[in-house]
Image (cartoon, rainbow, N blue to C red):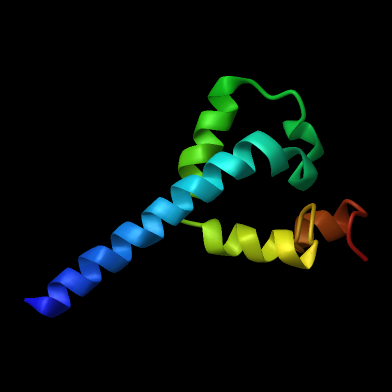
Length: 84
């Protein structure tokens, strides 16, 4: 029974931290990650808010490292001349 409580409390803490981070991210930092997010409406920010909650660790690590923009490299981007 104690193991189940530990799992539930860990998940709860993770989600609470994720919710707080997501609120900060959507209101203050989203424009630094994507230029097209500048001036975005409430609908876009709500989608990002709920999407950022489970991925807050990844987004926080990108904020700390200073990585911005697209981190993806694929054949389409290379053929379009975006990635060399």
